[in-house]
Image (cartoon, rainbow, N blue to C red; front, side, top):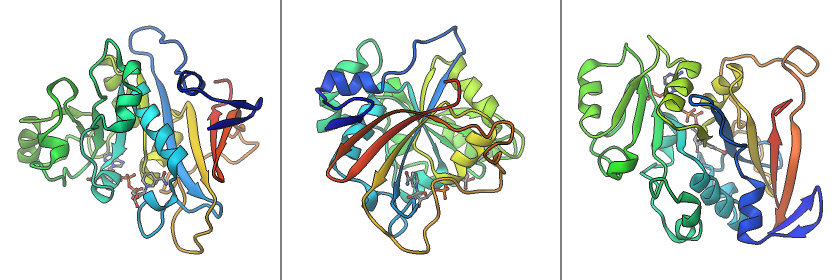
Length: 258
Ligand SMILES: NC(=O)c1ccc[n+]([C@@H]2O[C@H](COP(=O)([O-])OP(=O)(O)OC[C@H]3O[C@@H](n4cnc5c(N)ncnc54)[C@H](OP(=O)(O)O)[C@@H]3O)[C@@H](O)[C@H]2O)c1
């Protein structure tokens, strides 16, 4: 993989990992929340309902690298259901980045946000996560008590809100448990709320060299209005780097002042 901005450079594994290093960890409870998303040239977040058709070899490599760097991987239940999420399995790419996990569990836990707890509690995501990286279910007081109790048999359950999970409370609860380096893999409805709550520190965005046509939604979707450019909070993100491989551009953007 080559970096094409700010300088031209071929990247070793160490160089690549360095490009995505989280900023130094601050005080207990502080956090850094990075999103990793992919979109087509015409702004689509999916092909035939899933993101995999937009991905490529470079994107898959960075996807695995970002998972290895993270303390926790946060997803909306919609993405977990559609993309068939399971616990992180250190496959070929996981082995490549295993050195980044020194002093931590071999893989980061998945934290899944859900109001209704409409999750298959016997699925590998809930039932087969490793003991040192149990899946975390972040839900609400309004979620059915029986489902919550059933989920708690295999997963860690965090209640962070009455009817909706309060994103700030959820992120604080994760950071308070020591998960300071956070990665979210979406989906668009979750990302909308994260940005709306002012919690997004960084966006890693892969631009896929495909045109998908009208239909699919964008990487941010939902009811939370975001500040328009020029309004308070509507400042542009800063471009940290661009990597390129086989027509895919992997861009890393930092929040204003980040
Ligand atoms: N292009 C990309 O990079 C990318 C990345 C990820 C996903 N995707 C695509 O995006 C689609 C899925 O995304 P999505 O936007 O529909 O769903 P999503 O954001 O992944 O998940 C939405 C669900 O998360 C739960 N949730 C969200 N906010 C919540 C809150 N405040 N409190 C409690 N629960 C909350 C709810 O689950 P319950 O319904 O269980 O209550 C809600 O239905 C799929 O097609 C996937 O392939 C694309």
